[in-house]
Length: 140
Image 1 (tube, helix red, strand yellow):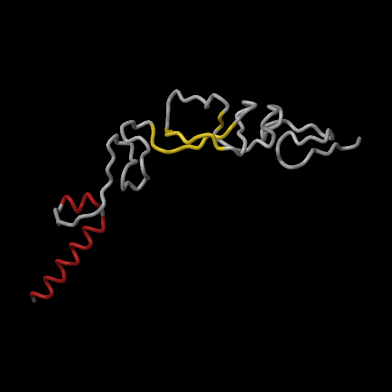
Image 2 (tube, one colour; image 1 turned 45 degrees about the vertical axis):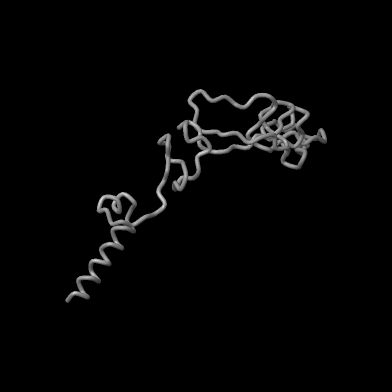
């Protein structure tokens, strides 16, 4: 009978501890585990399921974001990585300035009329929208 009770008790401990850290703490099972350390309450931090926080003193910043060179300032960057910055969810966030972009999609970073958002002009031999092709004109 003691073996059965021990087995059931052990099973209950395993079930409670596998449910969540809160239940483990609530029932004080003495089980240690990696706990999320989130100083600013944004859900990001050391050992947190959402990931590591790049600034755990500011709940509006939590992830590292790459910025790419954007010499023509058309909001499309080139392949050249300029910097990484701690970024997040800003109510009044502005697009990065000083020749930086969030992406590296520009195929001609010295001409602001050539980028993935540009309108393609047919038959001029220029790939304005960076899709790898010049638009062919339809003959009338």
